[in-house]
Structures are given as C-alpha cells and as structure tokens.
Length: 250
Image (cartoon, rainbow, N blue to C red; front, side, top):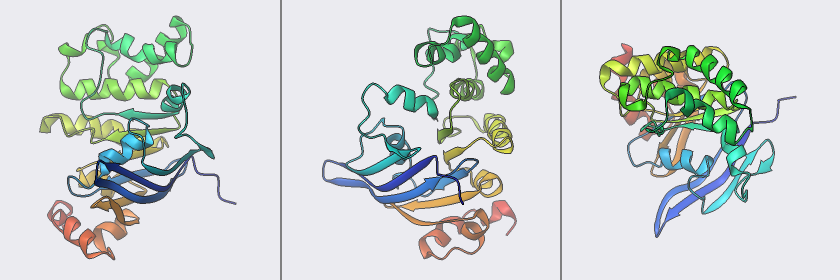
C-alpha cells in the first residue's frame, strides 16, 4: 500500500481580479519526491508555490497537508509553514540580524526552542550548506550565493517535511548558481522532499524524480524527467524543452 502523500493539491485555482493565473491544478507530493516545475515565464509557477505556502490565498480548491485542508488555518499557518518551508529567489533574510540569528528566529518563535538548542541546530545546518564560518556576519556582507545558502539552512532548521524553492538561482550571478544547485543536489541525495520552480533545465532533468510542465496556468504535462525532456506527449512541452536540447547533448 502506497504511503499517504505529504501534500495533495486538488482543483486549485487562483484569480487576480478577472485574470485567472492558476486553473484546476492537481498533483501529489510524496516523501522523497524532487519535483521540478518548469514552463515559460508567466505560466503561474511561482503563484502556485505561494498558494501552497499560503502566502497567496487560493480562489478555489484545496491543499491537504497530511490529509488536513490547510487553507482555513488561522494562527496555525506559521506551524504549517515550518513544515512546508520556502526558499525565495530574493532570499528574504533579515538584514539587521546575523546569519545565526536568521536561522534561530523561527526555531525560537515557531518551534518554541530555547536559544541554546536553536543555535546548535542552526550551526548544524549552516555547516551542511558551508556557511557556519559566516554565522556572525550580516546578510549585507555576503554574496548572493551565500545568502541563498543561509536561506536554505534557515528552512532546514525548522525540520520541514517539504521545502518549496521559488526560482532559487534566478537572482544570482552565473558563477554563484552552481554553489546553490550543488547544495540542492546534496539535499536531494539525502532524501529531502522538494518542490522546485526552476529555469535550470539540467537540474530538472538530472536531479528530479518528476517534472511538471506548466503553461497558461495549467499543468499541461507531468512525468519522469526522461519522458518530459525526450518524449513528451504535449506539443507545447516539446516546443519548450526542445530549446534546451543542446544543453543535454541531444
């Protein structure tokens, strides 16, 4: 018998004014999944993640976390966001706090840990992403790649069941992209469950367990990386992925 999904997205739609951005989105996230969401700009990918994290309120549909619909959560939304963490393209670190304090704040306020335990766990995850030596630095002293690695450590410190990545390399200079993708590959190898909106097609093809292709606010196709990148059923998927074929040597 298959294990219960961590997340179940059912008939999710989001409209801004009269503009439908997401339409009838359906998929599941299981433990250990690395799901890459790809598609052209404006297809609704980032809005989907923001709805799942409840930063945007869906217009209709449901989001089930461990079988419980979370859309109606009140104050418990913060506990949910700890379990379904998010890493943003613009890092969203607190500039007035040190790296260490950025990684302990949520643990203390949401998980109610004491500072000693929070700092111990923060240093563990900062070490995991190679940022422990910078624990006393402020974000303004860091490169973009370093900031993003701190943001990943901050999410990990909350012991999430799923981490949502919203184009985590799009704000980085090219030479910094690989250091963040290497951290994400390492997390995938360790079995971290991830939902990743990305334009990094090589990552999507080589690391993902499943790829979702979105276009015009709908899921047009989903399947294994091999299928999506080499034998898609949908002409729109084929048109999108064919532009990346040279990256893969096809």
